[in-house]
Image (cartoon, rainbow, N blue to C red; front, top):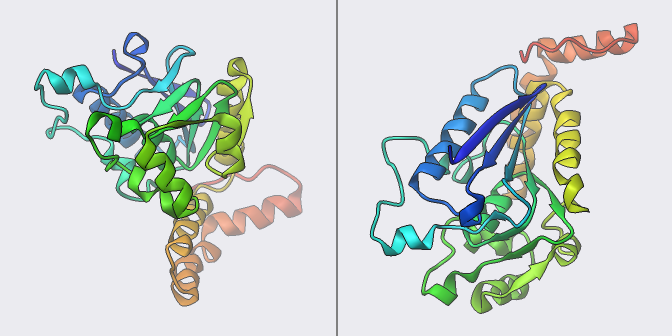
Length: 250
């Protein structure tokens, strides 16, 4: 299978399983990721997702250029695809566990995730221009994350940057030795998954909205139902009773 799915307590681990192709994305793989994320979205037992790649060489090398050159369909329109989290605010936090190189569409996958734990040997880049292509799967949104001049340098040269530089630019959260990447990502995702699911969902939505320029009135209106929720009451009661809260997501 090109995509593996495993449940670790309240965290779903989605692994791109094409190490022989540097975990490149073909139609089957993109559909597999989309279906895994769709299933996690609708599973109330899932509090967070970790997205990673098989092996230690590559997280994802982007689009499978061999398949593209052969003229095969790159998207299976009959199945969910990457759009389930790249073209909207996916309701559950996704942590990228970047076990190796993430370039082109692979880098765009990392940018679409909420948090990223990366290996010290990982590298990032948008080499599409070297192949006469455009990083239209999210790479062109890079100026929203880093200064325009730096984004243009990555997009126009197609060159890569190292993990520590990505950390300095604020593109990733943590850099750790390669053999610790998945464990660190699982710990981070697990910490998130223990929190109130409704509060986590709305916090993510509101932070993304505010980063996009949403006004205070819009933010206040979206936050109001959380304060009136059963989970908010349970959180306060659990604190007073010195016990772990029992969340219902409502």
